[in-house]
Amino acid sequence: MRVLDANYILRYLLNDNPRMYAEAKAVIEHEPCLVLGEVVAEVVYVLDGYYDISRKEIAETLEVFFRQEGLQMHEPLFVVLQALVLYADTSLDYVDCYLCALKGRYTVATFNKKLRKCVD
Image 1 (spheres, rainbow, N blue to C red):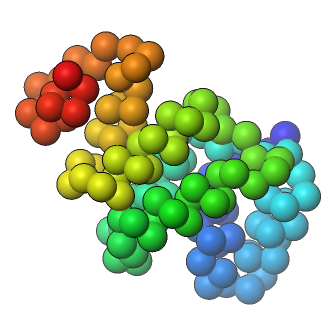
Image 2 (image 1 turned 180 degrees about the vertical axis):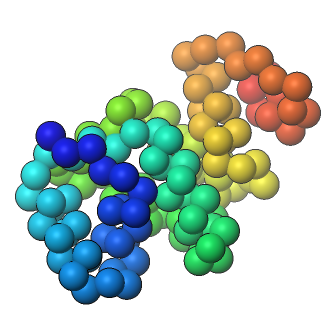
């Protein structure tokens, strides 16, 4: 199983470098791959901050991407998908959305007022 880093996923999603896209496509679509939560956060950060892609488009694109056969999430997929929904619908950053998505499984301790409203 391959563990994908953020740049690998970004080249696949953006198709902005033909050589890297072809390699990423071959691996992602034909080999078992693992995506870590930290990598998801970095991908969201880059798509939003560097490429200025809307929150809604990021959430929709990543949902389709993560549902591909052969991709496995380190965290439960439903938690990541819930975080993406929150990210599209709120002004919270992705990591706070992820923490909020964990509220059904854990008690989240925070001093962040916006996050506290989400987890309470």
